[in-house]
Image: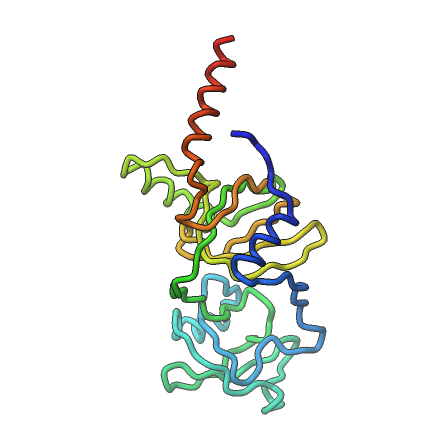
Length: 230
């Protein structure tokens, strides 16, 4: 209600003191010439992003399965084929050659999805209005809408601006610092916000709100009503 935004420096201090997470430089993309997949990497097949009909059936056989890369062109030069190299992978004991797997996208092989296990750490509790120029994927929008709808069915007034979850990283950006966390309201998917781009209105530890917050909120409501009556 005050619309007072928390600056980047205050967010950084709060996370450093509460969780011991330090601000780091962003990890750069792999330099040109470095393979996307290397021997020993874990992988997962997801053909929703596959756009080559001539090789789709090879990938579809292992749809949804997680496996491991056992050979690349570094071990077997014959896997270097055309613009994008192939890889040999193993899924549940079965080995397969995956065409064009070294392609950066639209080929249907990805890093395994992160599986969150709550380790008992304190979660952040935040109210954040995202940068209006930013975009969200259809999947992210659907998950957020489902969270609000579940609340409505329970008679709860839920907000798209409310987040809780364990913080995992702080990374410098050209416009400030990006706080990354696993969002409980979004199936513990990774989410992030940057107070220099959006507006961070509240940040605290879950279940550890200031004891006086309810009284302060009631005072603000009364003050707003008095102003309307004038």
